[in-house]
Image (cartoon, rainbow, N blue to C red; front, side, top):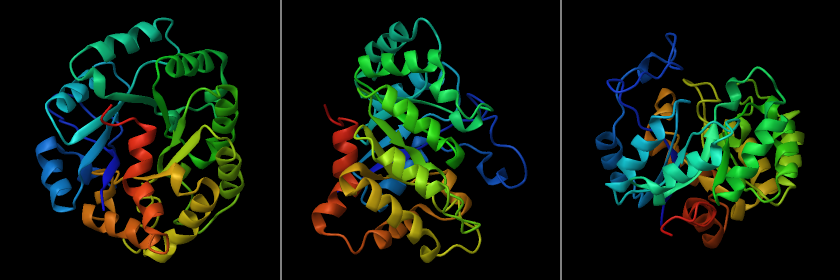
Length: 282
């Protein structure tokens, strides 16, 4: 079966600090995670293509990721960052698209999870920016907390021409075993046709040291029922996942969570959805 890893990261602390890596819990991430580290992991696990995703909200990171993608047959897409509220957003997207590796720019995202305003996505200037992303033919990744799902649904309804991809199933509270109001709000987002989701990031929402597949299954089942395999894609969330699991364990967990599906449905989750949504290989 083909595998597309629709969500992983790369960073070099010698080039740029990752200011979100703070505190003892995240200390294992305070080192370089380079393409030379990711490539053999992908090969060992049968991954044929990947989408690398931004980690910091600075203009310089996206061109660097695009340059890496330009030199790689493995990296098929880049979800980068640009300031949604900037008047020159359309020009900035064009600049990125016309630069080295620009043909692999497939989407943008912003660290909405860090915005203090839970309605940030529905601000007028943000909605104008989202419309510009749609006009450029890109996808918008949602990295949000469960409490921001209602605003995400309102934004997706307001910009129907833009495809929104929910990262990490909206970060449900797996460690506490809580499902509501996450399930209600996730279903409202999934009811909109211009939405999709990533089966990613679940192990780090669970108890890092004691999680089991059974802890994740109820949340994966809700998302499968709400979005369907045709709007769900696998992502490793490497190297963040290493706080709780190895790359191979994350992939095997995704296989376990989807083991009851048909071959065609599993092919969608592990390759087809990401290929279509991000127009990989275009």
